[in-house]
Length: 370
Image 1 (spheres, rainbow, N blue to C red):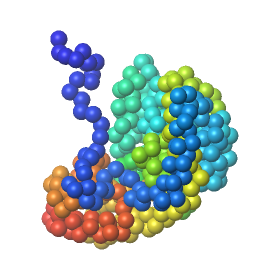
Image 2: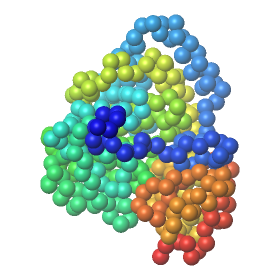
Image 3: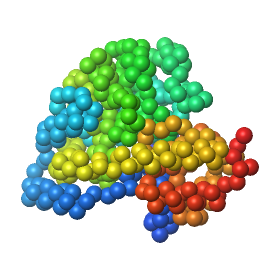
Image 4: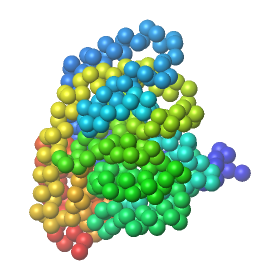
C-alpha cells in the first residue's frame, strides 16, 4: 500500500496555487489580481491598535457570531451596492474560499451535484472534490457570454443542489445580467442554491448592477464577496456572503468552532472604518483596465470585456512561451483560461508600462493565433 494512506482520488494531485515568486525574481507581479496599492499609515496604525486592543484577551475565544463585524459588513453593502441587508443575512469566514467550501459542505455532499460553466474559477471543482460533491461543468459561448439555453439543459439534466457562478467571471472578467441570475434561481428552485461569486464586484463598470439587488426576490440566492481585492486586504483573509438568514443558519452547522479569530475580526473592522480610503484607488484601477483593453486590441489581440481588475487576452500559438518571456523581463502574469489565452492583473501605471513594454518584446504578429 502506498504511503501516506491518502484518499485515492487525491493521489498525484498538485495543490492549488498560482506561482508565488519573490520580488527579486519578479519585480512586477500581476498574476493574482491583488490591489497594488497598500494601506496608508493611518490604516496600518488603526489595524495595529485594534489588534493590540484584543491581544490582552486572546486567552478567551472570540465572538463566534462576529456580531459587530456582521453589522459593519451589512452597512458596507448598503453603502457600496445600495442594498439593505440585515446582519442576520451576512456570514463571514477566512476568505471567500472558506465561505465557498462551507456552502458546499452544507448544500453539497455525496449524492449531490454542483454545477458551473467554463471557463470559470479553477477552485470550484476542488471545493466539490473536498466536500465529496459531484462536479459538472457546462460551457459558455465562444465570446464568454453566458449561454442560458445551455444552463437550462444542464440544470434540467443534473438537478444541481449548488450552482457556482462568478460575476465578474474569473478568468474572463465578464459580468452576469440580472435576467440570467433570476432565471437560474427559478430553474434551480428550492432544491438548491445559486451562488454568485462577486469577488471583483467593486471593479464593475458603471451601470453593471450587483446580484445583491435580487436577494429579496430569490431565497435560494447567495452573493459572496471578499475584502482581498478592492479592499487591498488579501493578507487578512476575510470573505463573506449575503443570503437568506436560513442559509446563514445552515452554515453554522458546518463551520469549525470559533472559525474567525479575534485578530481577523479586529483587522476587518478597522479596514471597514477606512473603506473610503481603501477603495479610493478603485476608479483609477478601472481606468487603467479600460486603457489596457484598448491597447491590447490595438495590437490585434482578442480581449474579453472586463468588469474586474484583470484582463484576459489572447490568442497565442504558444502562450507558455509568451508567459516565460514576460517573466524573463521581470513581469509575472497568469497562464489560465482557455488554451491560447493569458490573464494580467491591473497594477499601477508604472507596472502597466512595464507589462506593455515586456509584451511588445515578447510577441511578434505571427505569434498571435489566427
